[in-house]
Image: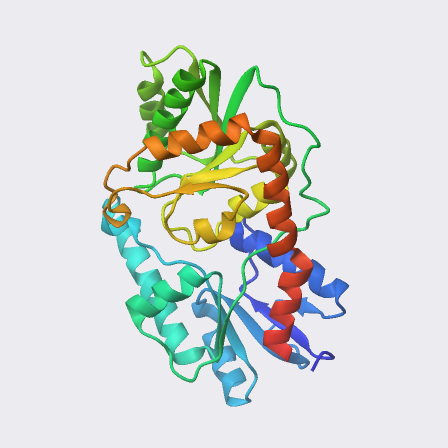
Length: 345
């Protein structure tokens, strides 16, 4: 079967997790002598890898199943935060419908499932039921370890830099920014140092304004800098200059930002929700949330502050742990090989 190609659908050209995965997978599969493309009309397709549940290609995928060509669905997490913090009516309906489409594709059209983490698999099984007699596997995301590389020392101790990297901090996710500001202020007070909280990602002007208002008047040693959506090169530089990454997302399925940080030798702290503890390992510190994260109750912050201080004070050791975790668990070559084995046998 390795003389067959893999058709990956849909072709994703945006910035972010699925697009990054697609580019990396296509490139590394070529290194392993397998062609991956997005042309469903080709006659040499040995398997389809479907990201999500694209409606446009349903007829081709049904025909593929009738010909016994594997149609494997790659599943991330599901939308949930809009059920706790309703935002725009149209966005909420789209989020619910997206979950429904994914679940229907998973149950009826996919011949096999790749879940991005143990948490991801268990969450889908809990909400939409276990799929009996349908092949499945768990393959975590990964990065090119030759591109994401750590610095050899610790950043300057004069200014402590806490970094957040999220694709979107909108539609209810702004809740996470409040916790990040509280963390930065507490770390500044505890260490008696200047702290800069850097936020990379898409943050609405309203959320930016609200975040800045939280900072003003609270501390003259903690500040916030919004980096916006930045290039991969700029992200690597920011992570090399930071002391830690605060993984602000709650219940992440398999956070690319965390894996990239670990590869860059950047320690990660966060709350024990979703797959975070599984992904981070000893490359940082993950602490109990202390409340009901599914309801966005306010967390108990003191353990997170302790974690941040410990990572900052032992930064070089945690940086070495972070890189080692990436090397053992998130090598792009290993991830690609696992996909090829599951898709083509």
